Image (tube, rainbow, N blue to C red; front, side, top):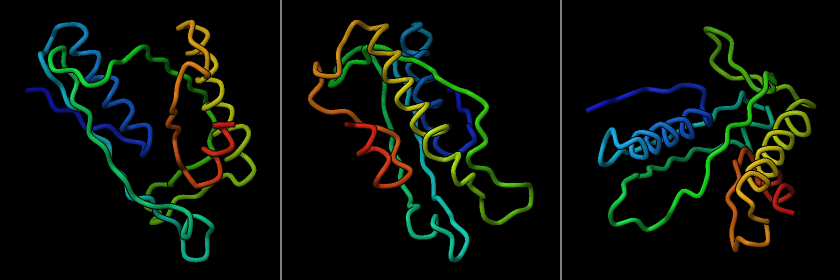
Length: 144
């Protein structure tokens, strides 16, 4: 049994999935589960108080009884401080103008383009796409 605890909100869930998938793909384990859960918090009166939410998911990876296949993976990261919580602070802060274009859209669209190019697929090859959803507006815009 291997258990790992990841941090940094949304990134933790994707890292758990990536590690679980990698362990199975490398034949180190037969099955692995990646779990991500978060309860977003916003200070009273902050836009995050009204737009942030909570969610979670769990994915079991294995090579038998497969219901969905991982076609490819891709990591796209930069040092963009759009959202942070100082030590001891009860509520996180967000970078306002840095949250949209230089943070969310740069990373989601950049990763999407790169994985399509690398895999040889086109967006039109897929009926559905699921994007990171920090609010209701950003993923709808990214999907277009």
